[in-house]
Length: 218
Ligand code: E4P
Image 1 (cartoon, protein in one colour):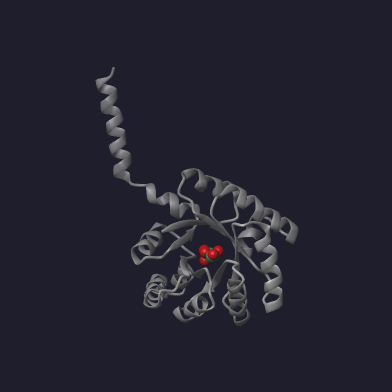
Image 2: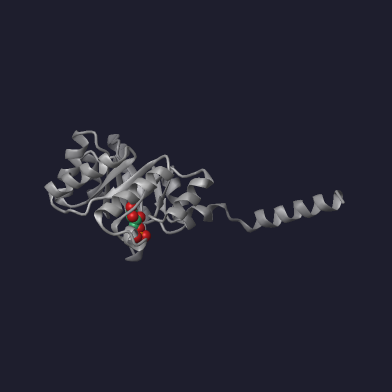
């Protein structure tokens, strides 16, 4: 399973990259705004900075919601850097845009997916990635992980190439469960990645090893 980090914060991206396990980055307009990045020029420059920090795919979301607008913006984003994947919302015009980009070899990430039907449509339209938001489903008492399992089954039934990018991951258990179900990618905050390495027995064990070494080597 690929690990993407879901942030526009350069320090956190660098920290995940330095850990050596990062495969890509996802962003969205809210995450950009959180970092105080506003205005098209600044936003585009920020995408380039992110691409310079990591080796993998970087999802950049269109703001337009009409077909022509999404095409124009998506083409501009795709030209920015070869690592850019154009993020398109799961709306009717978005499905048309996914097909348009897929026919032209431009990679896409279909975002704001909350049902298996939407995921099926995104795959039919040739999306490179589909992003089911599991945390936001959990927030409304609906099992987000169950959606990942449903999409996995459907994609495997028909050998769709679209990769399942489990999004809105909030914590380490989401990461582990996604890995068990067979999501192709997960995107979450730095804490969901770094949390995987923590175990009290590791800390206790290391402390004892070092103390015993010290005793024997005084
Ligand atoms: C996906 O690409 C989104 O950026 C993201 O995962 C949304 O997560 P949230 O529900 O924590 O905002």
